[in-house]
Length: 361
Image (cartoon, rainbow, N blue to C red; front, side):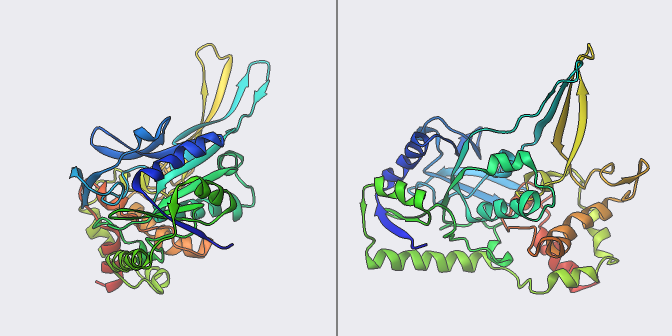
């Protein structure tokens, strides 16, 4: 499908959420609360964070000041689209004493405004897990994915923890319904779908000038260069030969086993299910909740954990991201967003660990 393109003033892009709400979408966008940027439902574009500068590092996240750029000087906080498509807790089934069952799925339309290309890719990965490559497509995830709209902000200033190009993801995406590239004096807006083009037509703008397109290309080149940190070709096969490496035990000395990395990861999908009964015993709910392979109780046989050591659980997590996932789904389970580095209390860098393990003992 041919893409349509406009150059618009900066304030014009904030009209997009209005138009999406007019079409009945529940709009999710980046907001700033208590010093952290995260995705949340918004009732007005005024709630969307803008003109701030963030800094991310190993186990470090701060809003460090104001910016002349609307969205260009921050990337993302700890949250991702995952928590809206595959919520941390979700009721799967309600049952009453008379055995009447209630099976409810999400009924609505979701629009993601201001996600990055790594998060857009994470949705594609979750689609494979829950729908496309699942012999039993998940009805709850499917209901939330049924009618989505995505507005992607291209990363003109990736954080130091970002490595999306390393895992084959372009920091400048053309796969959302709409994509935004911020320049000093406005945005280049592209629409890739029919509904995206409908929204684009409502924005006041003009055709981008040649120098604006050239500036965009230079920003794209720099972002790709900054996020390309290692050649991962064949890494999934090399890692299989490093299962017994002593490097895993070295990681154990630093890792707390807290599971922060898996919680903030936009593609970690593991969960557990429990039944919750009220005090009178008249009603019961079956609840699904996120679980992580860092928990000793995650992998058990007859009630006994099969991965007692912390290094074996970390190994399972990393191997799944960069090796097993490739065999399961044909792609990496990592999108290079860097969240696991930022929100790790001890600053473990997953990409560096991959490199060290493959390099050998």
